[in-house]
Length: 218
Image (cartoon, rainbow, N blue to C red; front, side, top):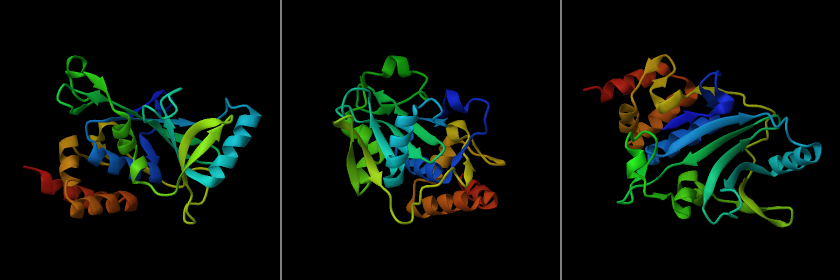
């Protein structure tokens, strides 16, 4: 389920292009996981902390933060997409039922079905950490802090996002058209349709998305 956090309340339900592409891919693979989006302009950081963060942004295009004080033992909790003047974060939440199936807030019986938290390896898989190359361990205060993805030459550090895509909560809406979560998951179930959906999102081709949606209507 796609959820907008406290910092996004009252704002447009849209995210930067790189965040959107990542979310579309992760939600296709893990449709029952909760992904909570937030945005931070880093105004609360001390000058020293902000300077350190700015240096990290130059080298890394994505940060994978573990659960607090676990040094990564419990896997990735938050994936951060940095810009010079703001950061976008996606928190991964959910758990497993008695049979080991992933459940999230989209399940109305989550309170009774939830038996244990997401294992560390599964959290890392959901975050996409295990699929990425050129990952480094970042030291914070002399201790292991978090892992981060090294920037490629085609991933310049931008001051702010240049392009946004509409991704309304629960993926029930896409721009000027409606689409249920089931229809969206069906569209993403085959590699051929997934490529067409992602291409339509990047090009903001809502006509193409309507056509693809029509293919899934009963």
